[in-house]
Amino acid sequence: MNKTYSAKPLEVERKWYLIDAEGETLGRLAVRVANILRGKNKPEYTPNVDTGDFVIVINADKVVVSGKKETDKIYYHHTGFPGGLKSASVKELREKDARLLIEKAVKGMLQHNTLGDTQFTKLKVYNGSEHPHAAQKPIVLEKEAK
Image 1 (spheres, one colour):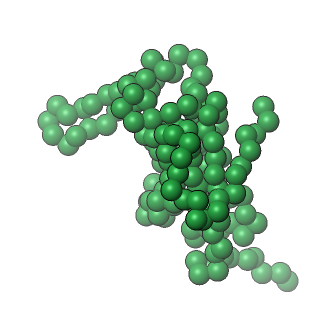
Image 2 (cartoon, helix red, strand yellow):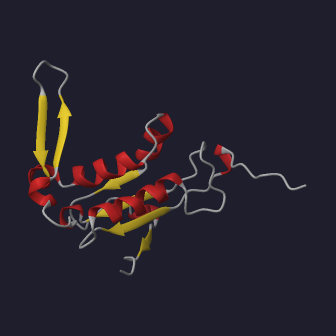
């Protein structure tokens, strides 16, 4: 009888991937990134172990949203003080810091516990096409065919 393989945290081999967000749809990009961060693209994926890889996303300011989401989609957060509900549209977030769009989308697709928090730390998002991770020799991932 075959035993089910379960990955051990010390056995995980991590790679670095580079994704160019220029012209990519926000949700579809976030799904690709979240799957890599969780390790779902590996055969040794184990749900309760961080088997994921590092992801570098460049050109975050050039990500695309479909339909009228640019003005109609609203992100909310609360400051913790009375009457402290804040809101911002996609357009306002993009003007403030476009990295927040991708980070919020990916964070929502990860587990909402300490495992998801550690997986989220492996995401590096940059507005321009420059990034300081050349020493890690990231593997460039091509855009998926539509």
